[in-house]
Amino acid sequence: MKSNILIIGAGFAGVWSALSAARLFDQAKRGDLSISVLAPQAELRIRPRFYEPDVQAMKAPLAALFDVVGVNFIQGNAERIDASERLVGYRDGHGEQREIRYDRLILAAGSQVARPAVAGLAEHTFDVDQMESAVRLEQHLTGLAALPASPARNTVVVCGGGFTGIETATEMPARLRAILGSDAKLQVIVVDRGAKVGAALGAGITPAIVAACEQAGVQWLPGSSVVAVDAGGVTLDNGEYIASKTVIWTVGVKASPLTAQVSGERDSFGRLRVDDHLKVIGQQHIYATGDVAWAAVDELGNHALMTCQHAIPMGRHCGNNAAADLLAVAPVIYLQPKYVTCLDLGGWGAAFSEGWERELKLQGQEGKDLKRQINSVWIYPPAADRATALAAADPAIAIV
Image 1 (cartoon, rainbow, N blue to C red):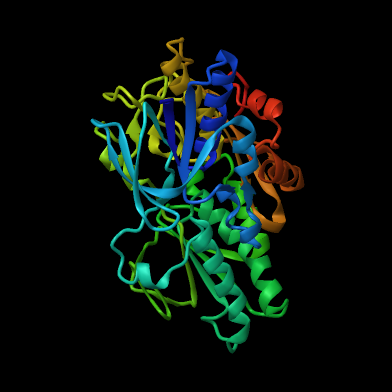
Image 2 (image 1 turned 60 degrees about the horizontal axis):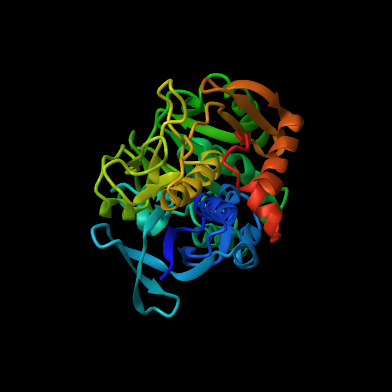
């Protein structure tokens, strides 16, 4: 029976783990080793773009790519991890309960929006976290045109002023005008706990955020929190009520709940602590990557963020190292000292920064051109060509 690397998840980290493991097995010319990816669908969903319209198009097919590099795809949802038996229980595409054994497991199950115990949050808010929920929001926005004009219809409240909240808010006025008409009296309001506009992203790019929001007409309520949501709007912690038919929740994320089934140290996001080879500390046969991995990116105390910027190179290293483990060859150390951001700011453009202090380097249209390149080219998987795909999975490739 072939020794098997099992990868849970077909997001950025999962896809690149599979390609990288395939690359090392190919170099070793070992046909007795196999790679399987377990995920609900054989497609990479381009989650960083879910704040944009036409969400259903934000995906890349994976079946042909996996086939050409020799990766087996298993359709299903992982539900149970038994580390002692090296076993994963899952529900397949037909709803049947099944099990699969592994020799090495790569947990790349991603993350999900955090939903605290705020009254009415589950029933009355939207999000752009997963494709299904982003499509639901898009359908809701389109349906607003059928409602009579009112402040509630024309007001969108974005809860959270972090990266996702800002991109969602600054894109929203153009999306609403396309649906409700250019004459509609719109309000897009960001409710954020930070003391100032863009506080979560630092002083370096705050002026760009302020300028973009002023141009788009996006209002901020800093130092505020939503304490309740109902069908008509939101209640803030100061007692103020904002009438709105569209409340979008972007406040924080947490690692996949599958991490709770693996023994190990976790951070505040639920991510499993990994060593510099991305193996879960305390586990002999389990690796973690992407949004489920609490991984150091340098020797200065910085850790990977839950973004594709870190998930792609983490996947390249993780797949390589799981394969190296089976081949009994030396693993590679994961380091990613260079950190950048490229924040989409709607019609104003975008802001590109470098370093953990987020020093602004490009803004406006220059930043927007780079953002479009990132979103439409750089983060997509390679073409279904074996040589091209395996070469792209080399962990030595420099990427930010």
